[in-house]
Length: 382
Image (cartoon, rainbow, N blue to C red; front, side, top):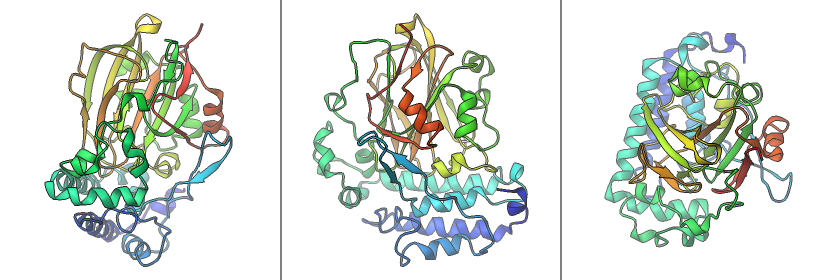
């Protein structure tokens, strides 16, 4: 995308996007308001509920549109690809990313950041209310989640006190067994997610993270820590709203530190991550950085970054997960409350050899791979 396409955009277009997003989040307070008929309606779905919001957000037809859908290859059958529909609220988030006077300054608009924070806090409060229990069944029906409920610690959806409590439901550990559990060299997927894997950070920025401003010191907000991962590899695990919304330890070890970093609430949809000319949202969004001294490699640091996103109410660690404790591979670490989110895992150089099929999908196919908690992502050296 050229800077010319975003150089002159009237402020009223941001106001239009704000109005449309507020309409959607207000509608979401109704029992079925966040189903695939409303908040999660596909942006290219039935014109009755999709295009009116899109036109309201983008009244100027010359404004840039979000790029085409990103294919997501699954592991079974090999090479199969599916397309994840972009929800209407994500499309609005994409429109917001393109507003401004120039690419380097537009996305720092206080108005934009305040808008996204306001709407995320609004959704968090709505879904913490006891009235939000009425939202659970329509959400389950909309995303066909009923078959997965027996995997949860609380399988009865009527027992959840609020929608957020349901959204952050925890899975039974035996429902996600770790691949090669007896091999301490193995590294696991931290979430049920759409995953990308890169042998180096440079490869991640070449093939996937195209927004300007991404660096490890900015992501971690710590220059000294970032230097430990110079030449290292990383895994990006994206959680869609319909996914099981907790994250787990990818390795066993000692929790050295947990650092909270305040930030914005931009969408983490692949179209936002992969598009040139947008701000890098990983380094702008609020996030929590956990440093684990990995047992299998004599204390080498592994960083797990929980990144919040558009309409995420909060990021919360499980009780007992704090600095100074031991965690084991596959252990549940925390939960995201309503909205899409991301977990980024960083490994020092030579710490892990990532699975080649994941690397191929990420770099050659430029696609995410569907993964489950505990799935093998790679392994350390012999």
